[in-house]
Amino acid sequence: MTVKKISKLLMLGTGLVTLASCGSETSNMTGWNYNDPKNGGYQVTDYVEQETGPGLILVEGGTFVMGRAEQDVLYDWNNVPRRITVSSFYMDETEVTNTNYREYVYWLGRVFGADYPEVGKKALPDTLVWRDKLAYMENYVEYYFRHPAHNDYPVVGINWTQANDFCAWRTDRVNEFIMVREGLFDFDPASWQNENNFNTDAYLAGQYEGTVKVLMPDLNPTSAGERKVRMEDGILLPKYRLPTEAEWEFAAYGLLGNSVSERIVERKIYPWNGHYVRNDDEQYIGMIRANFMRGRGDNMGVAGSLNDNADVTAPVTQYWPNDYGLYNMAGNVSEWVMDVYRPLTNEDAAEFRSFRGNTYKTQVRDEEGAIAEKDSLGRIRYRNVELEKDNLAERRNYRKADNINFQDGDIESSTSYGSPPEDAEKVEKVMYDFGVTSLINDKAHVIKGGSWKDRAYWLSPGTRRFLDEKQSTSWLGFRCAMVRVGSPRGLGSN
Image (cartoon, rainbow, N blue to C red; front, side, top):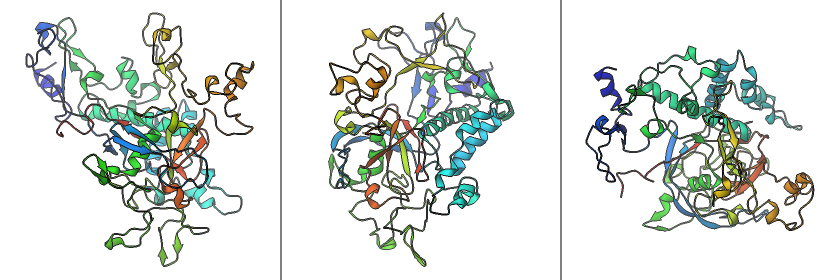
């Protein structure tokens, strides 16, 4: 490798990521220099802070009261107020649009269409969700997803599983873009076919050769002098994912605009201040703040004076953003979050980073302990952790992979504890009697926020509903999130 190439690699990430010069840092544990081949070449990255991924906005975390802020008109008692803390994280500025999702569908067709056409078909939104037995909706069935008039409208007809798949795909495409931008990969879309497409996990596992152009300098004196990018280099971004329910609700309120020192001076009902849904700013006085159904049979107001200017959905930047700069955290479409639904999650979940839905997995490995070969689509295979194989008996914090039902749905939390049903299938249904008296099971996921089809009650971020992970509707979309690593608000702040 030339000296010029090495110098370029030592300044990767437009100033955000650099490798410290030889001898400039010393271990305070051993006294040996970092980044020095003479001392073994242990490399430590001089890292400033996380790069903001495309489409994301930093949501500064903190404590807030999660749950009911409006009267419980349905008497569900499923959002009891509780104070929790949410870490800083990143969230999409808007809902995922038809254009965004068509890009995903197009990529799948281009990369997998010849040999695995079922991959692209599986990702397609269900456009038939628009149909109503007593309404004419065929125009939305035929044109909503494909026609350019709806390019910037939120994609609908997406189930929970499809939304998660989109987040995983987006992670790989963004990391691939970063590698191309930094000169580490060649830009060669024609070569991205079938298992040869870039996958972050496969690359880190050493199972992607693809379009690698330049390698990183390896200061290990026993190595060949070059290596692939590692997570320790700080170049690759964390994974895109759906937000948790707590993250979504915290971000929707945008309470940083209502705080003085450590005191929140006004609690919100909606993502804006006040108990009403019209704008009180003199410039926009009386204008509706969100896309929702004002009353029975009133989707958009009177001709010549449309109150929200949208009969169904609206462009994702149509209305005013909240104090974080996030659009449509009330109205337009409701949104999927990661959590599995339980009525009493607010009472059971942890006070820090609350979430229900953990199913712990690990990479599949071969007999020699190496990560198993990637699958035919170029992805690393995962399995649920197991008690004996993964030595979970020695752990204190968890003993099994699936913790969805912990304290709410498992046999220990039911009235049948001590005399469980003999039928294993009935054990799983003992708490909520799924299919008989309830629609709640481990496949039911939380939906947050109101939509174009809802009354104002659902615009309050504290409200919550659920839907099976394989179902979709014409009023339900999603947006992605990403963890914030390191400082909650940047190293330049106190």
